[in-house]
Image (cartoon, rainbow, N blue to C red):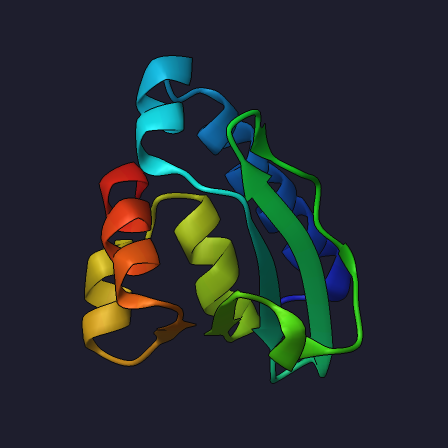
Amino acid sequence: MASEEECRAALDRIVERLGEVEPEQFKEHVVDRTISCRIPDLGLTFRSRIHEGGLDVFAPGADWQSGQVRVTVNSDDLVALAKDELNAAKAWATGRLKIEANVFDLFRLRRLL
């Protein structure tokens, strides 16, 4: 099981990677949404916001249900996703990554992953 610090670093890496996406491509596929990320094996929840300008840094949050996009992933899988050791599509297909969102948001986000 990864530590809380490793998970925070993984989330920071994801923010950094999305910051590398060409601004025009990012604007084309992103609408303003709140994101909550639940890490059940550690009992943690983090919140962020994605918008035309990028993905904000994740901050601790308590209410996972309030996010417009809700992500659930165990700590080890989160770290593996951030290091590109685990493919997001495969993780989602096998249930290791769960994303709850409006179907249109899922299509938009898929193009960025």
